[in-house]
Amino acid sequence: MTIKDQAYVAGIYEHPTRRADGISTAQLHADVALGALADAGLSLADVDGYFCGADAPGLGGFSMAEYLGLTNLRYMDTTETGGSSYLLHVSHAARAIASGQCNVALITMADRPLAANAGPVLAGVDMSLVPEREFASPVPLPPVFGYAQIARRHMHDFGTTPEQLAWVKVAASHHAQHNPHAKLREVLSLQDVMDSPLVADPLRRADCCVVTDGGGALILTRPEIAKSLNRPRVKLAGAGEAMKHNAAGRMQPMHSAGVHSAARAFAEAGVTPADIRYASLYDSFTITVIMQLEDIGFCEKGQGGRFAADGNLISGVGKLPFNTDGGGLCSNHPGNKGGMTKLMEAVRQCRGEAHPAVQVPDHSLVLAHGTGGLMSSQHMAGTVILEAE
Image (cartoon, rainbow, N blue to C red; front, side):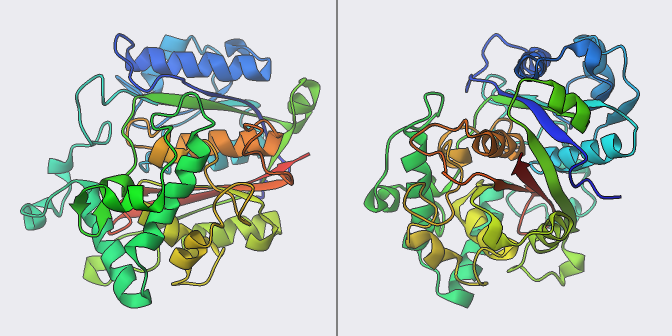
């Protein structure tokens, strides 16, 4: 079953907070849900499909459905794949709508690791229970170590340089200055990035995303409902998902699952990477962006560093502006799961509602892509292509 033209994004809302002291996780979910519904011009009574990940507190979807007062639900999906969860939720919600299983789908994401002093962990994940941990317990768990390995291998195989990685952060900072809610709004030079301290060679502090509280929500509806609302119409053109894991040590580290999720999304949408005018790319680290540029097909394998260093990611300068809200590198990465915020800015761009300084002129086709888990080992990729109507 195809989702092409079968579901529309009717509402979005990103929580403005970056530190949620005094706000519970459930309340964050409620805030973003109500914000997205208000943006769409709908109410909780209209929602008959609900989608959330492991960040939903208590009994997850059950608890949040009761907390929100969702009394008309006939479809629920609690897929959890880390930061890519919400891109998969969009795909799943669109397919549920296309098959008649629901009419109005609500997707929420919210977490508060800073306020809870939880550090860089994923909500609802007990790493001690991962089956292979007993064989790898001496290996540090923070994600930066795995991404540093990917970055070093990329440098070895393709000649990528630390300076080329740094250009990803420079581009993000140029965009974040226009976002009043961005955690880091200072415009950085290449030297500023290179002067930041090493965290895990070759990644520096500036190569790493921010850690924030907050969240976001998104409303998908049937086409006829979207057309009855007084909002810019954004339809789902295509979506894809794919998984990659260690394969008992036989994995190829220089390709992510995005190779397959993007190919499936492009095939469903009937377009190519050359047709995309804006991309929201998961940016847990600068190397994450470089890998996605290549795996999605925006440049050849091994050329991602050069693509970024040529200024191609900067709005108004390059041919593929990315993360024009500042992304996870500068603005917002709530709960260490940044896929929802990638969808927020992709929708804003597709609507023509991004900040005027970074709005792309031709926003007819945009892409959002996320990688959940660790690119160096187990991860799930989700790709969504949106089309302005």
